[in-house]
Image (tube, rainbow, N blue to C red):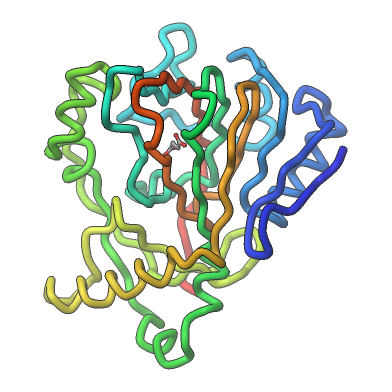
Amino acid sequence: MKIVPMTRAIGADIYGADVRNKDDVKAIKDAFAQYSVISVRDQSLSPEEHIDFAEAIGQININRFFTPLDTHPNIAIVLKEADQQGAIGEEWHTDHSYDQEPALGSILSAIEMPQVGGDTAFSSMAAAYDGLSDKFKDILDGLEAWHGTEHVFVNSPAAKKARAEGRLSANPNIEPDVKHPLIIKHPLSGRKCIYVNPQFTVGIDGMAKGESDAILNGIYKHCVRPEFQCRVRWKEGDLTMWDNRATWHKAINDYHGHRRYMHRITIEGCALEAA
Ligand code: SIN
């Protein structure tokens, strides 16, 4: 097995591994803890094999907004057809920050990919935290932020379109927003990570909208600096797993006219503690 870091901040490619092999799974878990994003190349998993690997990582969390695979309800479909415009997850985000106990990670399997394009970009929220000035860290210390889904999966024009296309589940519930510390202590590494994101965070607790927007927009601009990022350039059969508490990600929607079809499984996490 060969593990090749993608950038200084985040991500590793793993070659010559097989996620069906228990010994390899141990090394893959170690690499995941170290790099936060791992791309295990050339796996071509069946849905059952994808589920087996996910269960070796943790308990599966069934996503309640995405359309599931008919035959395997614990696998969510991430699909953009050649004639569709919007891609699922094209805004920077972290999966399930809207849950009381946000998902540990997600495992995405590439079934059908465009020849070129359709990469996924990731950004390290630990590196982004480390890159803040001490003065701004002091401002963020002790703050909490609200996260929600209504503006993303229920009311947005993009959600209405994706629902009409069958790419999001038909009757999403309106759920109460949840609150998390804005700077968390990462449950595995103990590193301080920024835990707000442009898609699901709706505001900072106790602040007026203008105040909250000013701080959040400052954070968001900082978090997308290229030195915190890596980019997965997919091939069919690849499997990428990322840590949702330590990263943001974004599907790059640059392949209009081509089909991109993926299977995603999300793994249960835990309540998040302030750093
Ligand atoms: C997601 O946001 O989970 C999907 C990412 C992707 O399609 O690249």
